[in-house]
Length: 303
Image (cartoon, rainbow, N blue to C red):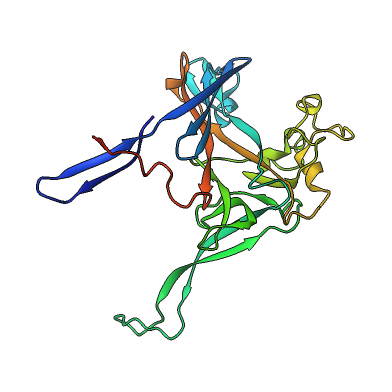
């Protein structure tokens, strides 16, 4: 559905070549009240899996009167003189059960990009010599599940990568084979406090990623029975925080990842009469899984 790679040879004349990526698209649409959730799962020929949910339909508006309910401006965009569009969330949860080269040897590899001064180096500056600062990679494996231990929220000031790998299935270069979990775009998490009934009902909305040990009876991130009544405790409900509370070991185990993506919908006038499709998603990307880009070998196509 787009160019998988391209290159311009800086020659005379210029030589531009590339390869159009072929994709199998699996689409499902769920109509929930006034919204339509359009989900595409795209299976790429280079091994990537892209998942995106777009939010379509029409907003659930409220009446507005400048004299009757002027405080509505604190919670909504006034999109007509007598019509308000309240701010609300679209949060989508996915379960991704990885089996990289088998089910019992998987681990979550966390790679962080950091910066630090290099020893025995100096740079001449206008003020004074100082050590040369360079980026470096810090890697570790996740050992135990738990809230705050195996739950993650992406942060733009702390870049890195999450990848489910098999530590015993390595390439000739010594890299473990795996798949990376990467957010496709900026994605919000829950802004309500953890004690709010909505958050207690759907706890995965607090995280971009949670990792647990696989159990057949832990099959979904939340339960329909508590979706609108998170204040009432339901024993043995489908609940990611309950799964995390086991605090089981995660090193070289059968792992399940729970992926949460979403957007805060700040309504605009252009959301009338229908919402322009916008959404959130993520990618599952080969992470040293192949020896090279498997889509790099086909004949070039003239662009």
